Length: 91
Image 1 (cartoon, helix red, strand yellow):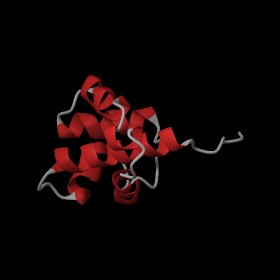
Image 2 (cartoon, helix red, strand yellow):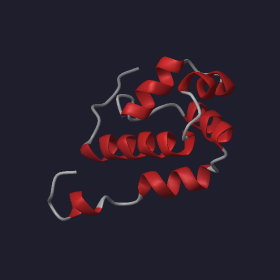
Image 3 (cartoon, one colour):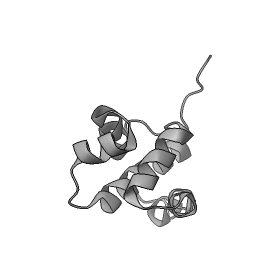
Image 4 (cartoon, one colour):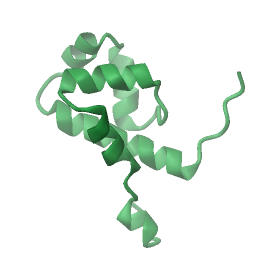
């Protein structure tokens, strides 16, 4: 399967997703969260850092479940426009 290059919007969504997961995780360890979600700690680290901007849906669903986030909350957060980008300023 050929993977298309990420658009700037994809990258921004990935960064917002990572920030949301970090906030929701709070003081909980990355290792504990990853193991509870049945994903590797490395996968969670890459998602939280924005290195994986378009993770698989089941991965996000599992992490969101462990963190007590609804998928509606996740979607609302990652699909909102970034005000600084819209105004032409760097984030």
